[in-house]
Image 1 (cartoon, rainbow, N blue to C red):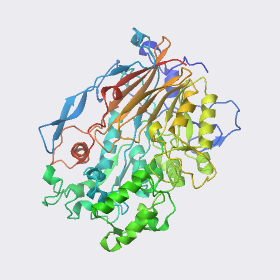
Image 2 (tube, rainbow, N blue to C red):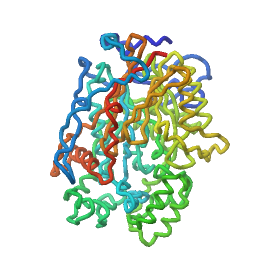
Image 3 (cartoon, one colour):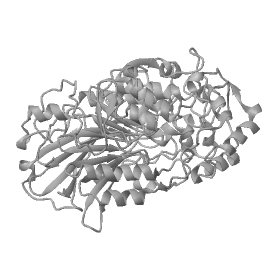
Image 4 (tube, helix red, strand yellow):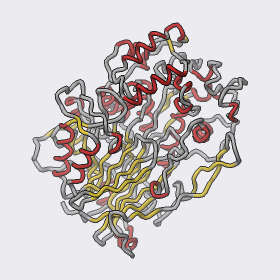
Length: 587
């Protein structure tokens, strides 16, 4: 297939046939050596190497007419939340936008390219939303006694912030540079935080639409650390001078009741796809499945809320260094502190979900939203026990979603030989198409090669080996990921002269709460450009402590995160990691 057809014609005129073909995307392969022809409810397999390509599903989004390009409304090119005032707790308001930076490390920027551009594809990346059941017994809030950032005051508002992010994407009129329609949203993992069924249900409803209350246990009463009376945590409804109030955090009567009220998500008005992260695959994002004590504790009636700093530091070190991947030491610590636990209401929905549960939730027609059914995953994934796949983005663009989590435990990643070989084959099979690779982990955080308990004889491969495979294929344009909660854009050049960009995007749990629009364009001069534009949620920058509505809480979510003790102020990255034009030579 030649790489000249596109979503829009040069000079940004819209070609209706290719626009409709590219507006939604259907799975091409489910990571099991088959190419798939998805229907609304299932995918039928065909023999490997048969050559036929999957049809492309059309989007059900009725997008407004594309605006003249460029435009900035609703993006960080126009404005970014910024602090006002001096020290202590700082209020946010409108701040200046971030300009676009041209990066030419991999190809020269030729004059006149804007007039020659042809848009190939445009999509949005969500990452690291960490939708959080804050009353979950397995939460590690008590690590805050050793590390201020181990518990964040904004955590009760993750669902409000995520819904506001959905609202932002729904309001976008198109891609900021080209004005082309946005094709889809891809989540690059850590969609949930505690690997709990409750959180998985919330995630599916946020993305596809629905009503729910971000509450488990007692339906009428909050049972977490924020009404515990412990000075270690922000007690928003209480006059207690806790540690955060001493830093300027407000007292907000009714905050917890408001945080637990039913919310409504409109669901994305675009198709959406899903990539798995370590917090989606592993309890607490770091422990392998299989310990019956931890599974029972997750849904049971006891919760540990305090821990001496020395013990907290020891546990945190074991997690950071991956020395307790099965959670044996964590289990022993919980048992040793059984008498220190507080009673909470048991709830079966807090039980950890398995990879098969994750797939079934995506395949459930109740969560289809604007499609596709499965959101990239298929019944073939369920049968094979895999969570990687490829899909068609546009006429000449293929997406590849990897599973970089290690089922053996630890938060760093790797992939098995079968997946690495599948990736190599998939890139070869689509050598005449441009390819965008998605994963949760970055190339530098794939260092955990612990064996998969389900495949003990299979070798695991690190980020350097993945980079080597990607570098062998000139059709790879970008590797889009998350995990590190920071904006970082890295050029990769191989010894053979091939090159691609690695685009890592900040989280939506830690400030600055960002998602990223990615546009692929052919410059008509032997180069391609990958444009990246960051967006915040739709919530206003300015907060009102008296406004505890769904929108008001979404705005407060951002401000609390900005002021969180121990928050890393560098997560937005530098100017060259934010709004960019990333140039490449055509392969």
